Length: 148
Picture 1: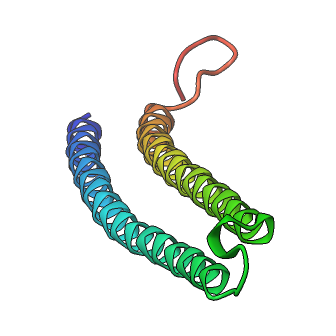
Picture 2 (picture 1 turned 180 degrees about the vertical axis):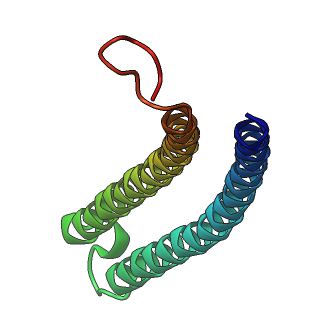
């Protein structure tokens, strides 16, 4: 009986240590995820600025080309059409980029939640394993209901 009690105490201590390590692991994974999110956010902000910069250059080139024409210049329908087309493309490109960045953030949040759920499942699996081992140590009941 003393051996059984000792094994139960050992199993309880091991379970407590496992719970503590699982919690620490989840905390560190959360910190790593936040660090990655911040890094990706900075990269996406730089990409968005570059997209806006390129769009402004294209618009300026179209205005410059229209202004250099002999007749009509900036007021010609060709110049105005080119400017309107470029501005429309700029708006679409920026909105598309923003939607993709939001989808990326959502994916990373869902991935983090999945990792937390998996960690919780592993924890409960470990507890169930300890409980199963303890039940096995007690012995399976016989047909009369007494342990073997």
